[in-house]
Amino acid sequence: MSALITHVVLAEKIFEKYCLNGDGDRRSFILGTCFPDIRYLGVIDRTKTHFEGLGLDDLKGEEPFVAGLKLHSIVDNDMNRRFMKESNLSSFFPADFRHAHGAVKIFEDIVLYEKIKDWDRIISYFDMVLDKEIWFGVSYEAVVKWHQRLQKYFSQKPDKIEFVLDIFDREKDAIEVMEAVSAVEDNEGFRKIVEKYYYDFETIIGE
Image 1 (tube, helix red, strand yellow):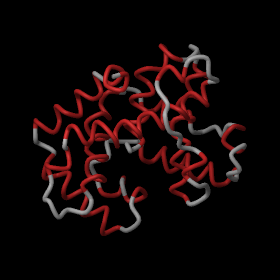
Image 2 (tube, helix red, strand yellow):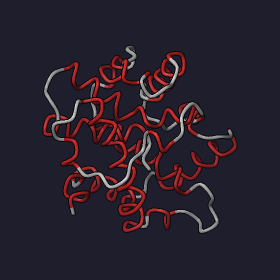
Image 3 (tube, helix red, strand yellow):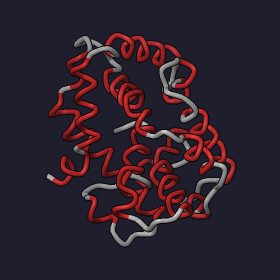
């Protein structure tokens, strides 16, 4: 699966093609694509927000929040089953490194963060809680906590330990991941693979 900056960047990339235009619709789409990972707060089971067998055509005609929700699963499934495997990104790390997947996720977010120039707009979307988020049986307080966590994470490129601590179960894991990311940050081969995924996203998942 991908981390949240990657999810937002890809959502922004395809929004106008698959969803209605308008700032309110875009907000709902972005909140929808970020909502599934609220499970990290331990407030909902993954099976209730992540789905199998979806493609980009499944977004057409959907209400923006639901379309964003579905996009999250499309990206997660594609990253796990195809892109990660075929690109063999884990090979850039030592064979015994337990957190290669986490390091790949953070590296993707670092590379793709620059694809959006106005993160303040994205951050402002999370000032609002949508009724649809509550309909999943998650409390208002949990949604607010999730939004605030994302606002912090989106506030700058996640290349410092304090911006990734909330993603990992233990501080030790976060430190190990950031050390691994630092080791590959200047690897042009790694960076080009991530860039290719961004530019070829629709083609890759449509194959």
